[in-house]
Length: 246
Image 1 (tube, rainbow, N blue to C red):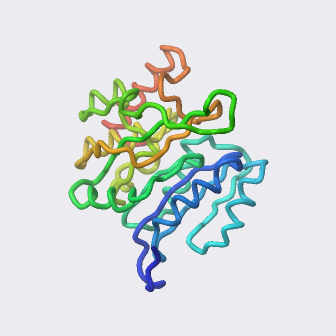
Image 2 (cartoon, helix red, strand yellow; image 1 turned 30 degrees about the horizontal axis):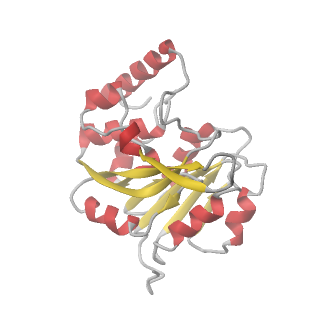
Image 3 (tube, rainbow, N blue to C red; image 1 turned 90 degrees about the horizontal axis):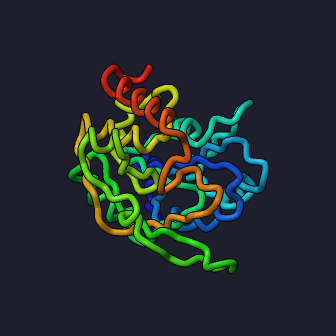
């Protein structure tokens, strides 16, 4: 699905944070690149992978892929992704994980939503291993586990935004970057900024297979942190929403 206009402005930036994702990164990039045109880009921020992640990415030999290599210390998934967002040049920005699968038609469906809204969120199939086998099967829909509802207070208190199901116009970045200090995860912050300043559309259709395994950066149910840590995060989010990022 490539265009002939190599000198055209960047249309879509797909931003991905990677860390030791060699097992699934090839399948994910194949599902993404097949839906992009020549004037699109995939911006990969790697957080110092020690496996073959970068080798797999480079093996695609695709000029649309831009790799930002890790620095002296790991940043974690949120602030590593921020590096990719800073470098994104596209009019439309898609966020993706390193280990999911984009379903056919995702890009076209989301771009249709972005004609009307600044941020689009969609549903996903949760992908699980079939017992102890190597086979991956679809389970519940994400919406059955983490239902989405609009509203700043609702999503400040109980986040309904999931990063790998989000895309937005680049105007959101002007309000959302730089990320506030001590941000728990990027998706809640981006969703709250969109709720405050822009329009949001939810597509009740699964457009991604969201792979679930022990090393997921984001937990679908619960943060794994104590109640006081969760309170601190919400206080910091509220301060950032009112006063802007520090």
